[in-house]
Image (cartoon, rainbow, N blue to C red; front, top):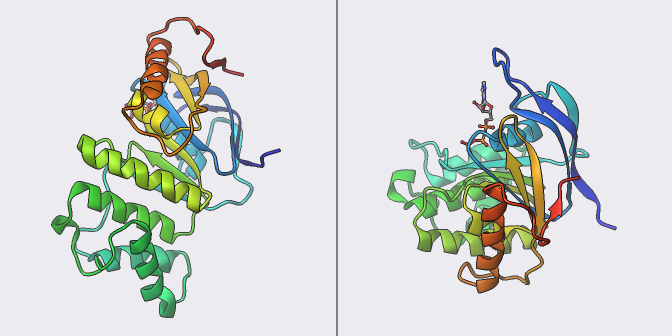
Length: 251
Ligand SMILES: Nc1ncnc2c1ncn2[C@@H]1O[C@H](COP(=O)(O)OP(=O)(O)OP(=O)(O)O)[C@@H](O)[C@H]1O
């Protein structure tokens, strides 16, 4: 039986000064090593859910249990400090994680190998492409030795070819490091390309509407007809059409 890495127990969230709930009664268990994609219309509470898991916000009701696992986060904007080199940006994360200074150079070498940007230490963010910046942002998250990686539309600003390459990279890295990943996206195909499971959320107030297990072998390709088939089904779910048997109803 798989171990649960993230247990979300009947979480509800209402922001101060807000009249409506951002989330109501969300129950979700994510297995260790699972790649879970969160999909849904704008305002259905995807980012709020990640913030609650990261502990950046406290829920109005319910609880999140990570069993002491460390969390890393990655956003659409790389969030790199422009005045620091790649090395300086990653060093900050290593310092925060308490890695001894004598180990920094080796760790940075190793991390840049993992994200396939060896030798990029002295470059500055403005000298890098969008895809390269996201690789460095990923290296910085990994520097914190996270076991749970929260990704909020991390590839949303990339062109299709770079995004495809990043899909291959994150799939490889997540498997190699046995990361538990929660990945927010608006892109239905991206969700099926990456996810072991896709959770579809609904707004007004935000809640889990349905789920789809993606049982396709890896590595996957975005242009695989099986992905298109499942993406079509998810489109139907998002458009409020009835489940025709692919997915499973939300618990
Ligand atoms: N800091 C905040 N204060 C008050 N309300 C907020 C705050 N952050 C989010 N909300 C509200 O909570 C709801 C859910 O927002 P959230 O950003 O989690 O949705 P989302 O699914 O991530 O949206 P998007 O796909 O557009 O990023 C929205 O109604 C939003 O207005």
